[in-house]
Figure 1: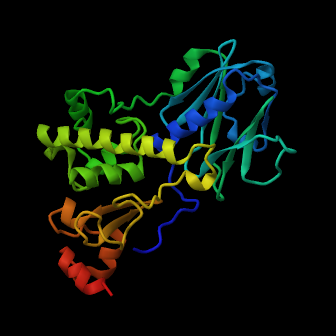
Figure 2 (figure 1 turned 135 degrees about the vertical axis):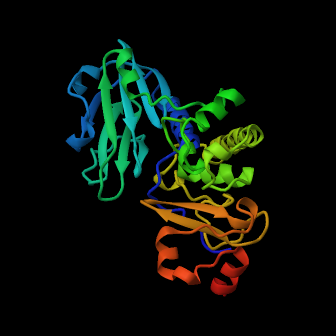
Length: 312
């Protein structure tokens, strides 16, 4: 097995990561009063009112999740909604050293027992901090994605097929499903044995039910695994889309754990889709837009052709 990337990556934290953050933040800030909310990069603050100074001395009364956002609720119906976006990661400092001056730190919230910070790695700064003074304002950020843990099979199928898209694209649409992103969608589809480019309109009720069960079991497994393996506050490197126990995501060029054939990838935008041709697409290698155009007639059509051309 080749090396697996466990460093910083360009994929957004997904449901298991967000739930881990929610739990670890709650353990530290629940009941603690705000001493200061400070913003290092003004572009991260997306609201004008209330001012950060209005949160001072308000105790935290709850920590929740809104999609891929973390919501800190404070006495007096104040709330801070934090979206780390693609390269953002939370950090906790027990000692509350002098405020960091590095370009990665976007803002911090100081409590008597420590400091919660949001660090964003890379050149593009996209993380968001919304400050609200009424619960109704939170609803403006709700995307309406379906929770796969509470959805009925009929609701899941209806939402999945509401638009005829590739199943990969539909699973990762936050308006369709809540908290499923690029990494875990690959794992869900691999476990279900479904091609990522299969169109949702072609899925029958049996396949939809299988996909729902795969979504629940895959996410449940990783929610429990992250909680077990990261008992403290996670470092930025521990919140990653590349894990050595994944079946296919981030494992292009490595053997599939189920069949031993080479895991494939399709590159698009800032992400890639990983899949096993044997387990998911009947041995057919799916066309990668850039590479298949380059190779044209030399593009391998089957996994056997691929491994003959590119292995070794």
